[in-house]
Length: 114
Length: 115
Image 1 (tube, each protein chain N blue to C red):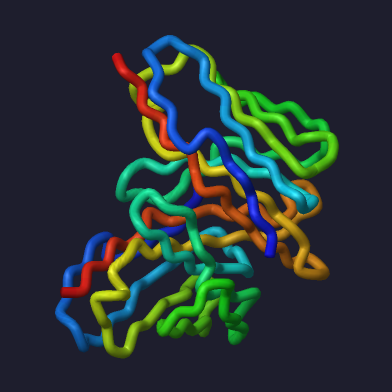
Image 2: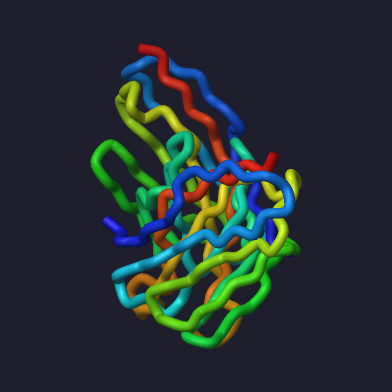
């Protein structure tokens, strides 16, 4: 089956530092999504990428859809304590027609020291 | 902000009990999903539905069952809960559009503990 390799598995940074995480796969995806999950909560969509090569920003977050459609990265600039959480990449691939399957990476645990 | 709700948020029950986890969405999405997630781990799809009276099993085998009688409602049932069912259960919904393909939005989850 399809697999997403997400790295790093965890990061410990100081407040104000920039963060970068990425996902790679041997499979092609139609859409890349980045979610953040706080403990005990559901994943919240941060950024959605719909076209190969697309670069999208959402506040201090920037993400890119790789040109090969097999990878994506997420950058967080000037991190703050509330950035703490688990970040998941996810790729949408077609099941046929207008139906898609969402495959998740294993997540990056981000800790920000004030 | 996605309008998808799950109840209860937390549930602690004894072995052998029958339970139903509720999921509702007010966005009119045709598609709904159930995922199972252990703490700090990735999400695994256990059930999905592409519309009323449509349900399919996901990638991870589960002893739970689902029903989709109304568009907005996708409950998950465990007939006889066991400690191995202890996990977080996440509900999601989506609607295909040419712009957003099939982006999924998640509820807050139900943390189930079976003693």
